[in-house]
Amino acid sequence: MDICLALLGSVTLLLLCTVNGVYVAYPLLFVLALFIGICLSRGFSLQSLWQMSYQGSLKALPVFTILTLIGAITATWIAAGTVPAIVYYGIQLIQPRWFILAAFLLTSLVSLLIGTSFGAASTIGLAMMIMAKGSNVNPQMIAGAVIAGAYLGDRCSPMSSSAHLVAAITQTDLYGNLKRMLQTGLWPLVVSCGIYLGLSLLYPMQTNDQSLSVALRQLFDLNAIVLLPAGLIVVLALLRIEAKYSMLLSILAAIWLAIAHQHYAPSQVLQFTLWGFRLESDSPIQAILRGGGILPMLKVCGTVLISTSLAGILGGTGLLKTSLKRLIRVHQPEQFGANAQRFGNTALIGLFAAAFGCTQTIGILLTEDLVQQNYEQPEQLALDLENTVVVLSPLIPWNIAGLVPATVLTTNWQFIPYACYLYLIPAIVLLQLRASAQPHR
Image (tube, rainbow, N blue to C red):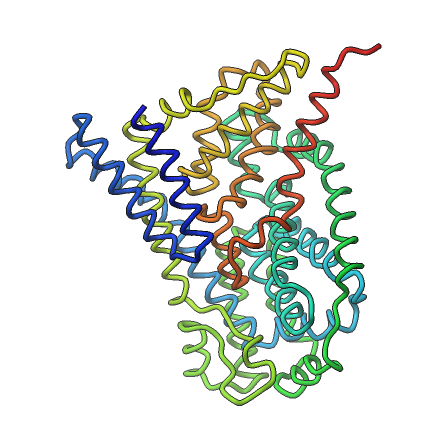
């Protein structure tokens, strides 16, 4: 019982701190200390807990690499003129009354091509946010549309690491899973597009006399060659080159463009790469065109380190697995059907696993371990994991899946209500399962 109360209290604390803008690492440190105390009271030694924490933190190392590359790619793409060019041409091509829908669809397309939500958010997503900040559109709407679109590809791209992970742990065929995901994701996609179209018509983008376009034209050489870093990302992804290598090559191309075409000094480009891009001259878009940098991502790295250490202790002691089995008991009326009840249980377990696993990967692994005995067909298990924990993880503000893209887009938890696609998938699938279980008259 003490573990269940600690879990519920921890979720409450994390939610309160997130809503009030408190740096999430602080409540996570408190939660970590709380569970260390509980584990010590249950007979675990401090040395064993340290070892579990250390093993858990090792899982953060690959994430640190990606975060570093994201910080560098964001800053160098701006300095190279890649992001300004996307923004400039986007303003010319995108119909203002369809802007929010376009942000969702364009990010979805890029995420499908490159298979990484972080990459899609930090490239095309950042460009969409800059356009939003230069207009009257609520940036939170754009952030929600962008993050939802970024996870469309993360869920069902052939190059998605989460899709490969789900296929591996359930021992199912990746392309068979993708086909089933496309089928169950169709109606959520249609409804999401309808919502974003409605928001677009209600809140059309209005820029101030094309001042953003004029300023970009004055500050950057927007020749088509500056789109080279973006082209590299897409081409290398299609060639199935590992994401970190394609991102590194794109960064090198962006550095060359920043020096050769935008005429920044090498020392300036290095400064941008480390600290983030900032316009040095006074400009009406000085507050809009900024971001990235390796060092600003250290705050996110700190959160990742604490969260993976916490997950290591909860996983190593078995407390989380045991408590989730006791804590989550969903009793639904029989007319909803066994499949609907099973899916609902998987969704709730996935939500808690994402909250305390703090990463999408740990959430997937923990959920699969807890629910796999309820499934006779591994293909159905794989599909339910994709329709629950994979898309619910970004809706947890302190989970890396949502924290990183929100940080890149310089937003906070307020994007969540607008990330329609992510919560419509489990909601619509559950409604369909309940409907199919109703007796025909």
